[in-house]
Length: 150
Image 1 (cartoon, helix red, strand yellow):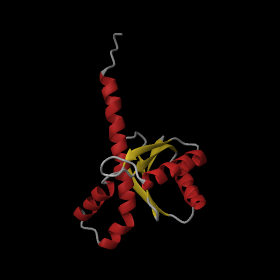
Image 2: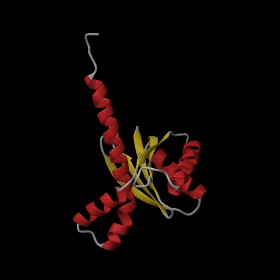
Image 3: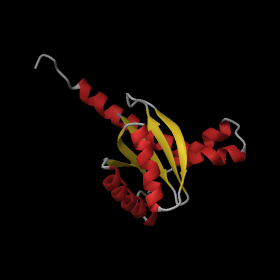
Image 4: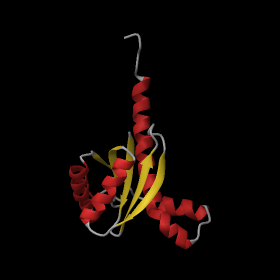
């Protein structure tokens, strides 16, 4: 099963998807937000199409780590999303994900127009990849504790 990564904005939702092994994240698409019902329907379709078993949603924390109004809105959206799609939603600190995505796109020498088209899905990719890496490291650490003799 795969994991969807989301970068929730007020106008768009960047979407990324993991590979089947949960090793890498790929930018997928950008959903233009219209209303909650349509947004949820679009995400439900993507979750079904990619056989997602969970969703990782970027949590917009302040630079000091505290939560502000945007984080509260993301938590509210996550609750609705989880209930609607009947999938678990986990959070991942999204601080600087858009900055990292912008830097990557600038290094790729993309035009401003092209960067604008893909920035949200690239930010979702950075969010999801961070979550995948952290969970793989946690699993690898537990695997080191495995003793077949016991």
